[in-house]
Image (tube, rainbow over all chains, first blue to last red; front, side, top):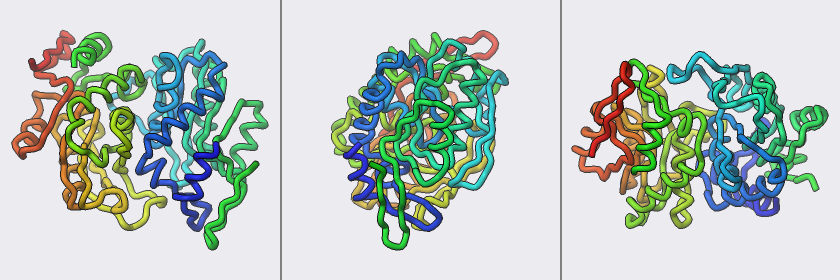
Length: 193
Length: 193
């Protein structure tokens, strides 16, 4: 997605430790025009799949998932939650996810009411690096007996293993921008063609 | 907002401890058509205010804030984050917020890059109860020297003190549904006229 790649080059910054900061437009401040274009692109990529639910994980996945859902016809978003809340019933699927960014292991849950065996799920997230968050979401969908019809990622770090792992599982993963290399000393970012 | 009130009566459930569960359509599963109507209503209520940024707090405020921003002209969303992330620079405004739902105190931060003294801020959140989250967001805006032009809330628990406190501060607070009483034994919900 050229508009996104141009924006990453313009406003993204590379930090030590393979961190790409896109908090100017994606995950702290959000450019909602770009967000809407991203949602539109996910509809183009997965619109033929009879999706019944879009699943993401709080917090920064929520904006992207809602923007995508706005382009589908009456498809709700479900966001998995990172810790047990007193507002959730005991009736939840749960999994564990290790965060690359925060160096922590989270319990992640989704209510059994909102993923059913006949659901055709599109998983959406902002980032894919080592794939832990995504593997957790896939695990939640499988726990429910539902099917993963597609996985849409905004930015994939192609030099980390997550994308390869998930494609080797035979899943329909599409990333709007795949970064093959980045350098925090020069700031250079190279996208996969 | 009648559509919202009808939906609360249809799909909301009252739990002991003054908990209103609206996780079927607002803060776990999200009905994006309703979300878009909510965004449209916030534009109607605050569209005359020359808003430059919409500020919310992760996680469940993000969807509502983005839906509102989609109806404004080129107004970015900024969401305050609940804990220090290695992806945020040290240059942040911070405040402390006590969560009614989770019985915890959070450090909440927003990068100084994304709220400037000349910003005219619309604060958006899904719930208002005792007002702690909102007072924290107001504090962040004041730390930046920016102005709070309006506060839009989806559901206000009118029987808790937050709304009264914030209106007495002279702030332009508007809630799409205000609940004056609710009863977890009968399930009855009474809205303010």
